[in-house]
Amino acid sequence: MSTVHGRIRGRILLLQVSAVLAVLALWALIGAAGLVSATALPGPAAVAARFPELAGSGEYWQAVSDTLRGAVTGFGAAVVIGVPLGLVTGTYAAAEQSSRLLVDILRSFPVIALLPVFLLVLGSTPSMKATVVFIACVFPVFLQAQYGARGVTPTIRETAVSYRIPRLLRFRRVVLPSATPSIMTGLRLAATTSVLVAIGVEVLTTLPGIGHMVVQDQQGGASAEAYAYILTAGAIGYSINLLSQLAESRLLRWRPPAHTE
Image (cartoon, rainbow, N blue to C red; front, side, top):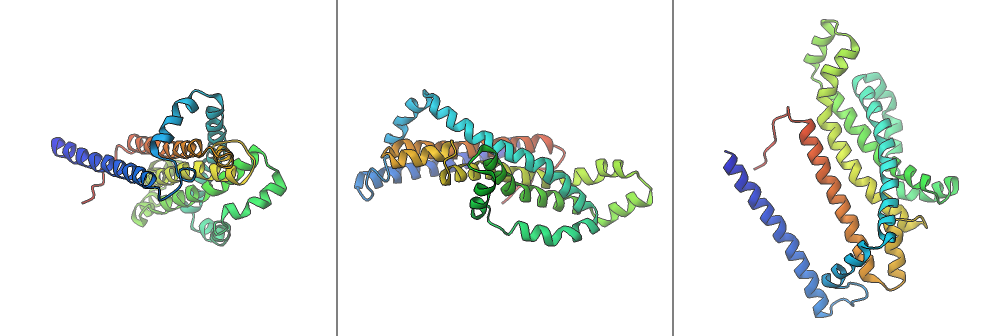
């Protein structure tokens, strides 16, 4: 059985690598054919040639650090607030019903559209970037935690109540194990979103980070450097997704793996 799974994983990895190589080849062909100017779309070789110089500069790592600092701060606050509130409202029907309208209204606002308001209130500061990231991340975390807490079947819930199991023990042994898979899904989505939103804020403001460097290089005609920063952002997002999947697999070892045809 392990040999079969190994072959399947190998085929999937081969397909993924082939897709990446196909995109790079198409990118190079577009540049070589002159369909798009080199200023707007430099070739992959030109972009790759910029990475050694950028990796050796302090400005590059400072930009990465600024982006990650804002993303981690906002994401951490979203976890601290969103998970407990989601578990409470998911466990108690009265809390969920009373907060539903407010949550539906607040999560309907596009966070980037509210950026001018945050600029007026908080100014162009790192705390403003972390606040925007927090608002973008808190609702996925909150809703997934709530959904997981509500996933406890009525039979199990009624059994725990009928045996007069203390609330704290009921939460630890019943609610939390049931909600953990859903919580991990929310954390994985929010972690990737935090970096994307932080970069978006940097693009639209003067705050330092990867987004600001992309705009600065594009305006200065250094398109290869700009694309190098864009690829860096993609690599960060991909790494976060891999780490999230690894953490989820470790924490949820008790859950049987889901296989898709």
